Length: 260
Image (cartoon, rainbow, N blue to C red; front, side, top):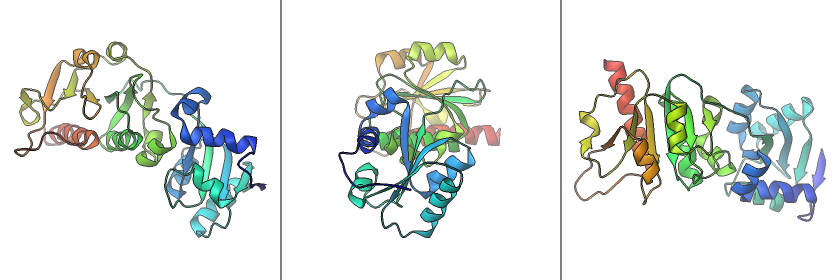
């Protein structure tokens, strides 16, 4: 295992760009996943790992087991001084293991439901949306050009492996999403006239659109929607977090399908 102790190291600086810049993730088509759970998910999905990074002095047995597993498989391994590793980690107190890998290429699955993220900027929200989508049985996720890089380290952390259960296609304009997915499209809109509870959501396939918090759906995304629905909220509550709103919508559809 190679040791990196200086922030001037060229390889470390490259990883730091991936950790801190979604532009770098998009440009290099590489990213960093931190933590034991993501290590297990990536191994189970047989995603090729370019490098395993270990925090010097890591004491967690589960993290050490995965480090040893990747090293035994021939993955290049690097021990980073604690301050350097901590600069790469999306959390303050991580497990002490991180993996560098190429972002997998993906295309629309052609089956199941679809979710379009329109201008969602916060990576934690983006990750939570992917986690909700996978749990609700969505097969494909599109993201408009104004959406945060879905494979960024913070989005990976928020999704906790959901990336590997979805077909993720980024930089898709809403009009292009219509061409790629021909089912009916519904938009989650806090100001829509139709209540979610009053809409039949039992179509064989369905596309959903969620927008950025604060701004909501862009005009192009709103034009994509065949119908917009609102979640009935308690008085004086204006809206939900975008991931919470998506969860309500997607699981209401799932409920309707299950009960017939």
